[in-house]
Image (cartoon, rainbow, N blue to C red):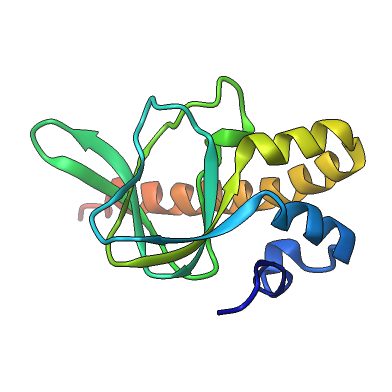
Length: 155
């Protein structure tokens, strides 16, 4: 198993971050194994962490009493799950469930926010990096909505 530092250094989101910053981030992280069917987080619950997926897939969705988890998106290796730890009031907006056994690096959101608060340059750098991922998610959602609501012209 690769060290957390090695895994982080290989991820595009952390590309070109210096070793001391990777060490800071790794200090807020741990390897995690999660069984298939496990709920990583639930809408409305406190958002305390996020995961970098190393192996497996996660369904992101909305839970409904009559249909269970309605999947909106699936995430896999190399992708991050969970943004709500970044934004007050730090509550999950979606549910996330392991579709298969997962290997992740789990980050403590409170720990990361504390490091960003004490080092605004680090905070700004991480916010730019995570904002890029959020922007990609929004563009992907936009395309899915266009696909869902696109109506072919009638002749």
